[in-house]
Length: 256
Length: 247
Image (cartoon, each protein chain N blue to C red):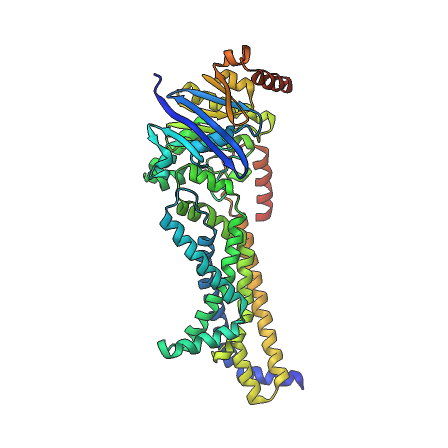
């Protein structure tokens, strides 16, 4: 009975479920990417430490920015995304008359950005400050040091937390059904409403979410592994250093 | 010949309640190799870091290359002329050996990549690290890392090199390879200020040795004079202790 109902729903409503999956993935992926960019900007600026060489104007801007960033992070981490979605969507609807999908992407992006800012900031703090000092001693500016030395390492350090945000977004985008975008939760709710097979429909929905998050985790783990092994191995064979030799033999094994 | 490159007058520096430099006057002439010695906490490293503006003195004057660096507008351009090597090497972990030497040149000197690479390979060759150009810096030994750090600093064509305990974090068997590179630089006439605990090296390579104690310069002079006929009782007891430890 249960299984036959499930099969019936899949047959009849397969295409609308697929639309839900598509919308969910679009919202989660773009939201994570925009959120990451936002987080890099906010987290990067927050982590900048001005030394005595900074001008008073720079100091003022930095102080002003820090206050803004704090307010932003506090608000968006301290309220539910569902509330943010309805509030922002309706508050701006009269002004910019936007569609629901861009609104949903906007909301999930700035929500993710607040979390990303903190992730990036802790990633930056984990980079040994001696490297920044060395960069400054070579004549590199604060910004050059941040963008060519610190942030690449911070992003790599924080990659597990960053990719976790994507998995979280796949699930949490379900609350955006409150502004009626055609993501998976919204589609499932419509199907359940027209078939009255609530258990079966939501069971299918849960299974789809589980598949999406599992596959996403798997892919992200592979990327993470690959990132950690992209140590350039153009070391000439004349190298006799034992540390390097050990490292190379390990690397060859893992390539098999 | 005695053209002063670094002139420091009466600098003071405190970290909170702790006064680290208590009025230091210090001059280094062009081509001179000066070693700063003294106990931990005597202010040697702070003095060195003030010269590169990694610390700002609370008061006093620092003139380098005839320029008042405490009031200079372009700190980055100034720092590019002063090379610095650190105890912990501080290589950029997101780059390989060659990129460590090339990237700062591209960012600061605005020269072409080919030119920067050529220069980097030249200095890596000089420190004996050319064959490791493509290696990940995390796979190197301490001595190798410090030699790369020296090459990286040399790529900026510094007029003055600062060394902050360059061998203190190294295993004993690696100290020699770094010191021999530094000795070569000293022989070429590069102006160098070296904070070190290697008494034999200091004696061997310096034109002048400065002994610091409790935030002040206690005594300075030629290696022979300082090691053989120290005037101050404190200098004598420090040297005796250091030499006893070395044995």
